[in-house]
Image (tube, rainbow, N blue to C red; front, side):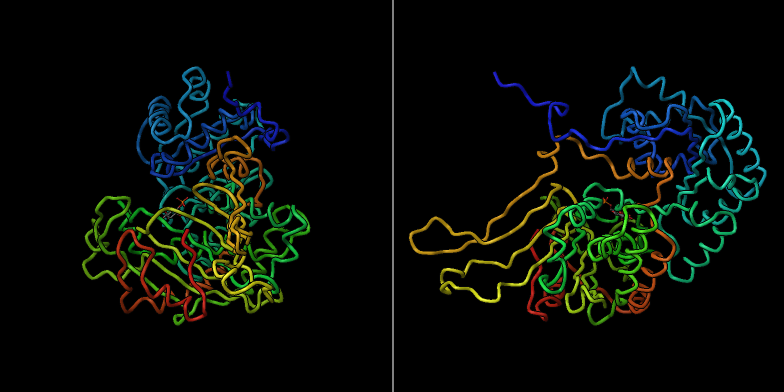
Length: 505
Ligand code: BG6
């Protein structure tokens, strides 16, 4: 009788990095009763604890305006984890975990609250033996970021600098000017090295694998340039609409929501030069250089869209204007396709096409590197008519993996070359569940490793790339596209102009 393989039996798991945090730490969540804390942060902390990756001396302080005690917060956290964790609650483990959760009620705009918080944190620090690293996670609407960092500074919760870190959720400003103003406020209380700007895309295993793929292998890097690559396509497609977030989305739109952060970060990883070492400053220097070489988005090379009604996965869905809280005349774009050019030795002349949108045919994020065609084909036209150029597709999500498309002789009596795929899949190669991005990033913040967090210079450069287009898109209307499609026809024309077409993921 054949036995099902268990993950621990898989020899490929040998040597997988599982290093947890060892130094004592206290993790404070501002906005602990909010959506992000419930959906992502509390489940991530729970799963880290279950995987044995948190330090043995550890505590969480939930901070929010709602009045409740530790026990009520523990019940609240349990309900959130039950609803959103990727693994079920283990009742035997729960009491030990729950005992690490604490709650402190307070507002964000009164320094007395921060002094009270300081007493709570100091008390817990003492309880767990002292010398704890302190992570303050700002999981509130961004309008509270300035007052919270000010409050932390006023209560001296920003010290000692070697032990204290502040984690800031996006958005980091809503244009270059406000991003600079926010940084100025933050830097009045914290050194840049204490500031961890979170972009959850950078915590995705498959996004991190872009480094590994490029720099742990000798065979890809030599062809990773304009000499061999015709162009690159980066797709971040979502099947969901704006859901209950229209008020936020109306202020944001697709460029601020996805391009300025997730998409440009992924592009920077694909385009950057090899860093000297896989450590925070080397990696972030190279990403910043790639972004500096990227030309700002231009109106004539961009297409904006807004979803109309249609069908997604067989279900009828609403037009964007019919979503709750969307004004009837909204011109907020929910889709963009654009051409980006990188002015450096490696990429000049090889465009990066990007597209992202809500309510598209399916949820898929991928990077497709399209190679040039062979300089000469020694086959008849008929033999090679089905042959496509080589492409390498990094599948970020779902169905995480990598595939290489190349030509092979089909088993037919007359010569015929067809394109086939060579495929790597995370699931079957590592027989392990891919952890949530937030688990990776929270653990890194606790350990004090900022490699996967965004540095201020990259944030500013990304706004410089996006701001001109956002400004030009203030007026005029996006093109409507049917929900469940791949976006407006003009997106196809954008590539057709250059003699290219979008890959169908
Ligand atoms: C968030 C955006 O940053 O990323 C959302 O605000 C978007 O609008 C989400 O849906 C996508 O993340 P993921 O991990 O589901 O691809």
